[in-house]
Length: 161
Image (cartoon, rainbow, N blue to C red; front, side, top):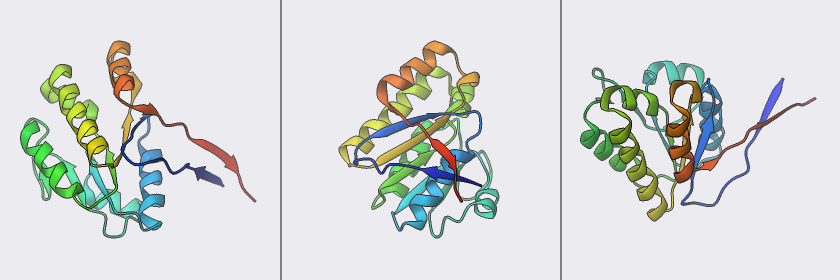
């Protein structure tokens, strides 16, 4: 089987995980949550489906959706931002899965400003943000702009016995 290694970073940093499959980011969150680190999950996946696959304990999940609870619409960035800030109070790690959906509903310029706000606020409040993004869903220059405000997150996997 595969084992995932993640070096614990210093607070106040944001990481870009370029991947076609956000499941690796959820595995990271699962490890963090099970280590007792207070975290929050913001995702386009339904909270029920996330909890069915990953053991996240009492980690709050905010669903980026136009329906359901707890949910925040992808086309109302102000409310989404308020919800993220509120849920992340007292928490050290934020998993933010869904940037591509924000681009689809709001355009890249509004979505990148939104992401910059999340990243900057996390830096000031000494939180860690993990942002999985599918590079195939965005243009190369758009990925580059995200890279400018984040650090790369590289995963190493290896067989264990």
